[in-house]
Length: 285
Image (cartoon, rainbow, N blue to C red; front, side):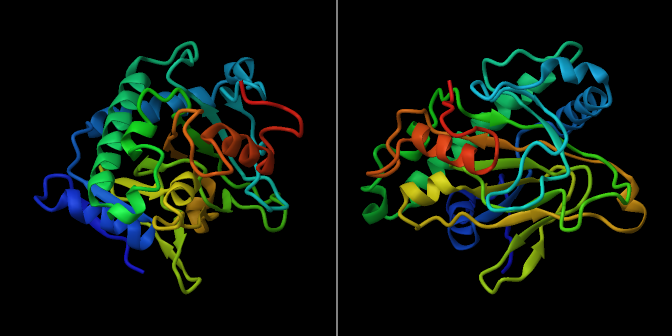
């Protein structure tokens, strides 16, 4: 499988990028309008935050799903070991932690706008036989969604005491419609191709990786595939260095109908229970 790179400035981007998502579940977009310096500055802000003890004052609540999630909180669906990461959930209405600049909110807004633009390209390129099954256009599903989520992630250096089988992010599929991921500070992201082989995803500064999620797969009745991916543990000198990433998960509004069985809210709650972020009987507020 080839993970295709497409320039935002290309005359064919509105057709080529949806085709990449349809055929592989992933795409890489370059030459986009989001400032590379802004992305670097936001990474630096969150590196400082994760290095501070103040983060523990922001620990999340299950009902809100916002705030700081300590190391080894989350597991991939079906995984025995917790992922080797800590992270923060930031929604449009989540206050920034004390000491962080407004640049994070600026990046959130810019990435959200790009994500909705990509969904608009997909609306235009999806065959009518599939598009007619949507409860509304994809870009409409995400309009003013308060469930869209920016997740700054810190993968600490390895220390040799990790449990057997524990990795930075075990094989999983994303829950949402599409995910936008500015190039992380280090390699490690892999995607599984149709033959079951793991392929390294490019990590070129300035690129944004985009992948489709389970909600999009559900709404499109499998036309868009939610591709399995993981973040592997590094080796050699890289094992002693941290890795930071910052995915933006584009979610529908909670009341959006994805299928006969599920709204976006009911599907999200089901999946949060599967990955250990919501317990049986708990509801997402």
